[in-house]
Amino acid sequence: MGKFYITTPIYYVNDEPHIGHAYTTIAADVMARYKRSRGLRVLFSTGTDEHAQKVRQAAEKRGLPPQDYVDQLAESWKRVFSFLEIEFDDFIRTSEPRHKKVVQEFVSRLFSSGDIYKGYYEGWYCFWDEAFFPESEVQDRKCPDCLRELQWMREENYFFRLSRFTQPLLEHFLANPKFVEPEIRYNEMLNILKAGLKDISISRSTITWGVPIPFDSGHVVYVWVDALINYITVAGWPDDQEKFSLFWPADVHLVGKEINRFHSIIWPAMLLAAGLPLPRKVFAHGFWTKEGQKISKSLGNVIDPLKVVQDLNRYTQNDRVSVDVFRYFILREVPFGADGDFKDASLELRYSADLANDLGNLLNRSLPLVENHFQGTVPPGSADPNLGEEAEKTVSLVEGYMDNLSFSDALNSIWGFLGRLNKYLDEKAPWRLAKEGKTGELEDSLFNILEGLRFSSLLISPFMPTTAQIFWESLGMEGQVKNAIWDRELVWGRIPPGQRVRKKPPIFPRPGKERP
Image (cartoon, rainbow, N blue to C red; front, side, top):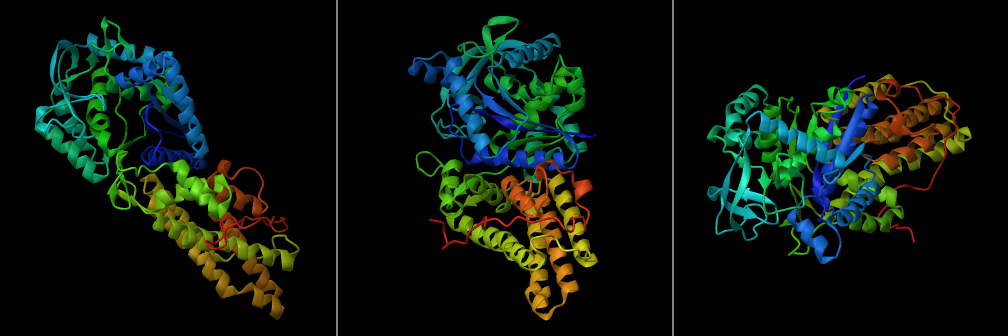
């Protein structure tokens, strides 16, 4: 059995989950579900980044110890991810004892190898992003990322000899042009390497909420270094070598483009220094805007995924189905890796055209015909080889796109097949065949439509787990569609004749016909 290890960044615990967090984590969840359906042993991790100066200050304002405060916040994040149907295998928190132990072991190894040394850092620091910036990247004393005011700091720190790894990383990039994707992000990192790397601070001596440096109790590990190490904590390093040898290196680190440098340059350099293999891929996706505007709290246009789902309930009256609509939209609307613009009109169009019409209506049209002409059971038809060929071609396309994290292309292929099924239904016109008494052709047409719906249930399952399960059960299939292994199930003509279908209310009522 093969393996697949996919990660999201661990999220700053003091933030409220927004569309950016949901986008990365839903994408990772879809990939994890897809790989499980291919029979792989999957490890999917996400979590919270809890060691930050701001966190301690926020806890103090509430009269709470930092640990109690982050315990509450972490549970809130888990609830949101559960609501969005995200099935992670591990939720890592940087304040956990297991992680602190790994961080200290890792930093000790770098110190022993001579890749950490003591010195003074002097330069610009962003309190909000917990990040230092070289003067060359700073204009008007503003943070290049969040545009807030920077502070000039001079502090005794421990430094990591990042500069020593310029050439090894450059060689790795040139030998592995798919190491960072998409290509534009690879080229950005390649240019940084070509310009040469400088040593970086990896500790703070003015902060106490963090992982203590094991060889100097007056320092804590810099929050970004602490956070990056989470990926090997999850994989079992250094104590669980059986797990670590199975899952490491990670197959994909999914990140937003703003933290690409940390994951594509600093983290690989740290791994090289520790003598550990590099991840196979870092994929840095784009940002979302809202109706053409940059998203920010000051503009009041932050997209709350829970609010989007609640708004969609005016159509579905079902949180689980509305979550599927949201998951579908954000992965269909924009090629993964590019920037995207969240428009309410686009969401409504996708709902109406893709979901209510193409997907939902196909099931709604088909099952009553089975009820009326075959007592609600799958007819004993013959598999159409031409439709079967198109189905198998669709599976091949979907697998190729998914293996490259091309979610919108995968969905486009699935919807192309759905379009063919709708056309097939119109062409065969089983309602006419019934009137003309052509029982054999009627059996064949409905058998193939139901088989096409079975295929479609499997293909949409990673993206829309609730919808896929409703379709699966409507077709009379047993068990959980998410547990089906594609190599066994995606064989044309396998829906059992005589199996009873189960007609259910429309999953995606058309706009204008909202449920009361």
